[in-house]
Length: 262
Image (cartoon, rainbow, N blue to C red):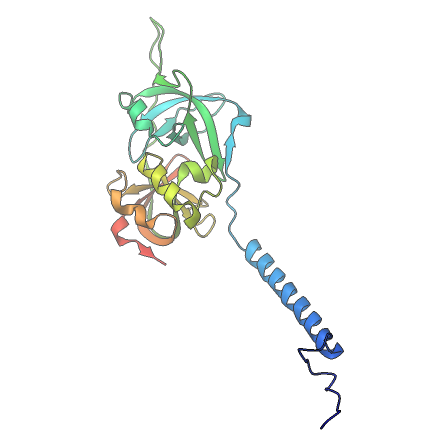
């Protein structure tokens, strides 16, 4: 009808004001939406596993340790207990840059060595970056002294496991780079691993295997993973295989061809 005013509850685009009932509805609706999103984000954040911050622990200073240098599945040091570190340990090894310890240690595998470097640490796992002049060498014995003896404990089988999680390169994930996981890190992770960084499996459920979250990866025969496993890095996967304990380090021996991608 001509001359009739618009319904005050109805929005008209050419008017310069929003009807009060509609304005109240929009403000309340926006507040509820923002609050719901914030609550959802908080809930998701508190339910994400937090295995600890990756740290390049230079603040600890240069570390020195001795033990048996092992080549497979990737270079590790079976640390000899001493007064400073009375508990047996197995530490993964790396070197600066995207290179492997194998080149520096090729003549020292299965021997007792002295190692110096800086630690990468995250949660319940650590890695030593071999760094400095004469930082990896056979244990020196003075003339007339008896060479020290050390025989690491044999691997302890923990049975067969089926686990869900992510394959990461250990060096970046433990603190060399942020982020050290996920699709954003896939290209770097594959480059690091192909250059010699030990691949680790990070379980989706914190402490899933005997209270541990991180496992060094190996092929079924205990050697390094095949070259084609790069497609499975940095995505959520299911793996199955035997788990062994080397002191405080778990080794996950998997059939990479049976990997299930989610």
